[in-house]
Length: 318
Image (cartoon, rainbow, N blue to C red; front, side):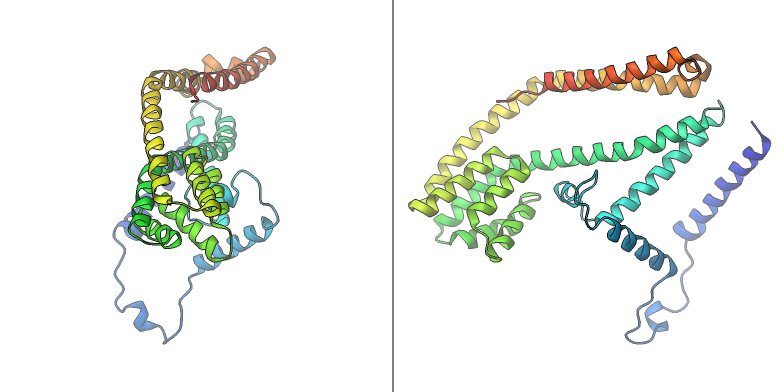
């Protein structure tokens, strides 16, 4: 390895440490407060803020007419991410650059720095998408676990003599996330003129909750036929509690299979990258020989097929 690269890398690391110590960990305290140095009504905007605002504005203008994509606003909202789409894309681009630089640093010793940089940089958006899907699934599962308590709170508010709209507003204020956010969305939609049953059904479909869809159907039927909605919600809540018991039992029984699937999928990937970093000559055949390249592509396709197969095998529907 060239001495110039070593010296340059050490210099960059020392400069990063200097910036971390003097600008982040121990920044100098200003002699006079900023609000005292500015004129009344004047707002200080730094150069970095201006650059960031221009970047986000450019991304917003470029993605205004594109609702789909890997990181759509709907996907970010389902995952519970408050950041705007433009800001999130900037974060993804920054993470991609950092991972590509990490690939360069790991590949300097074995000569595969370009391959590792491309692989790490290309894999970062897909990794972020996977983490986004995982966060969405966790949020939907948490919402499903809270449906039982939500139904009890709705029934209790109706039994106390409050109206349905007022009860929904109270539950949206007192419930935990993500139920509070979703019910607040329902309350806002009804205030704008949308039908309550339609708003509840849309929430159930967004969160993929069959239990909450039962609640929406019960409220819709009650609006058409009348009756004691509190008693109906009590019956629905009892059914939901029994379903949750079965769901938790099935989840406990399938835990071993899901863990085995994760290990089987992650093991070949981890071993390959470990050998690529530790002993690159052992796996250089897969990048220098046409047969090795074909074998690598076939292995990648088989890994995808096996991942899909195992995921369907350990997923239990009831």
